[in-house]
Length: 223
Image (cartoon, rainbow, N blue to C red; front, top):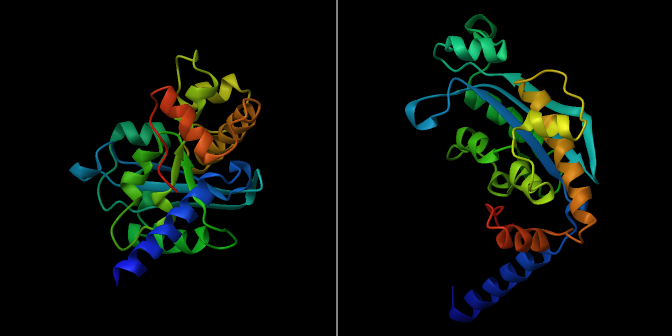
């Protein structure tokens, strides 16, 4: 690539990023997701045992187009996880493996969506289990953390766990520590937080990043 073409391509990419940052957040497509795992440390061999996700389009949660599956971790599920999630070794014995689940999940995620953005509560944890080389889709590189966004809207809220926030916002909690229910709950919290930010004239990624930077909170990924 010649130097002129390089700078032309750089300029086009920069312009696309600027346009993306200025797009109204509520007009974007999002995928709220959550995983349950055998433990907290993917580097130590912990694995996913369930994956749940739901799409958000035009500020609406598409509950009828949700994704949920158990995942066979190919290892024993610890007792504490069995008690927390209700998922035991028998439940995942006939479940598909991670690679099969990811293929189905990626196909689902790009169907009827346009450049979706991942959202979730402490989402970098979930993505650390999902983002495997050659498997994870590009949209997983674009994410927003609902916990950080809630910190902007309700800075005095000390307990920022998903369920405490959901109770505070009077969201309906059906089952705790269920991947799909947690994904839906994250989506509800996210939309309520965006509506609250809208009242503060924070409606784009650019304005959101500016506000988070001023509060010294974790910034969302660039997209």
